[in-house]
Picture 1 (cartoon, rainbow, N blue to C red):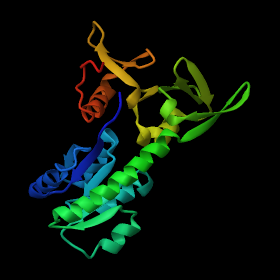
Picture 2 (picture 1 turned 135 degrees about the vertical axis):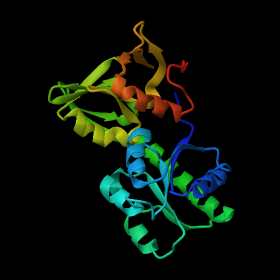
Picture 3 (picture 1 turned 180 degrees about the vertical axis):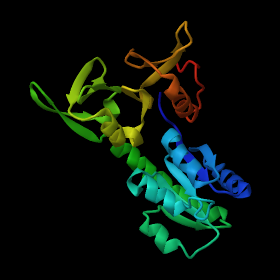
Length: 249
């Protein structure tokens, strides 16, 4: 299953502003809206579930403002941030927060298009580097380099994680929780307490006779999805234009 769209999160407490971003995005079919948020608390929750590639982020929102969202999440774990605000006095602070761009409302179509073209260049470069981002594991024959884009799924194995590439597996001394922090921004999502799967490796979803959801990978492996994780996993597939329980063949 190949991802053909980049996911966008729109965060603004004003409905009219969110609609405006949607209208401007309509000219760029490569981008799909993963969700809308009205405040900082919703943003932090959505970032965990939808793993967007881009966020259009208002600065002044009720409760947790845009800068505080970045501080709590950390700049390293944020997607590309495009600040969209009615005020220009925050521009220096925005770029200090590692923002990709800073747009002042109302935004012209031409200015928005310039940002989107730059975003596409950056996201394309990121996708290429992610595909070839690698980790080194130790085997009986020495060190082996694994590309993240080749790993189908990952499971906990005591103090190790077991990395599955097709029918072969490799061990790395690291907790699953710690490893998840490394790979969550590269297309991996938790399916139950002890396993992560690469979303691009999913072939289909099925259900057992008891109604439990099971993910089937391209390599043929079947992995159960816990009830707690089924909502987030279904949302991740929905962002790719699929529905939970729908065949992905």
